[in-house]
Length: 95
Ligand SMILES: [Zn+2]
Image (tube, rainbow, N blue to C red):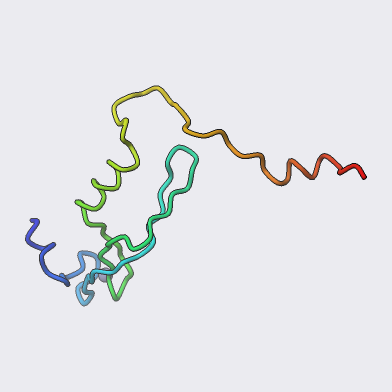
């Protein structure tokens, strides 16, 4: 099972001629309603069909980073949402 992860390529599960290759991509995920981007995230990408598999160790590392309070159900936003710029446009600036 995990021995596949030791190689830098392995056959794609979706298409017979495809090879999964290790690439570093920008991973996007949502944390509550914040969009988190993780640059240089390891992913296996098929060079034929474009299928992506993520390294499960990297995913569990990421989920630990993003959910230090995993298990607690009380939602506690760390920061208030900044006012949107469109909100400012409803208030005409006074000269
Ligand atoms: Zn493929």
